[in-house]
Length: 305
Image (cartoon, rainbow, N blue to C red):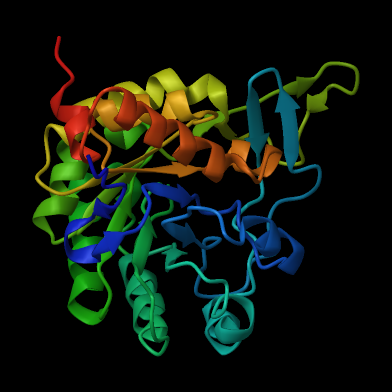
């Protein structure tokens, strides 16, 4: 039997592998890119880009605990103009399809960023980081209102020449209203979950353990939460779902595919072991052969209660 390891992501197109690299864990460090060279990576998602440069949160920005990581980076980046100007030098020759993650303080900022990125050739798509609690010009927290999510997707879709992926937080994935709003507005895919809001205190210094009061928790501890949300949302929308959240092994990845994810994305654990994409793909390939599964969607179709 010939086993097909490719992934179809609707309007985004086909990926040679279901294994993606999550936003924020793949910068532009050349040595790190070399570690991924030749590995079965379907696509790489950039650090989140904002309209203007952001200095990020005060140090320390990372707290590592048992089975989890809390980060409070604060979307540090040099802004969309520099990103566009230096794209070819930093991402243009990495050898993998590239998806650019973007975030804005308002619908208009999302649109401005999306328009500026139209000058880049060869992008696979844009991932809209919609977990933001910021308010728009009308004083509404668009990250907390499904209708605002739809407005961001629709507005970006009207000006961008690239397919859009709507990235949702755990709170936006508790029910399907946010995912449905994004899908109805024209999103090509949904990605979830983003990190879980969390905090740790330094009891000996009587202050937070990170420079900011709180951050986003990722790592193996969030996997059961993410898995349930992938299962629910993938059955609510008719567009592909990209699953992430605590994937640390090939077995984890297979669970996500079985729950309904069309592709999976690795974040925290990829920083722990950059060879993880190859290990995961090897496990998936072996699983398909062992169970005579011809293609990846069949993994989900065989799942039953």
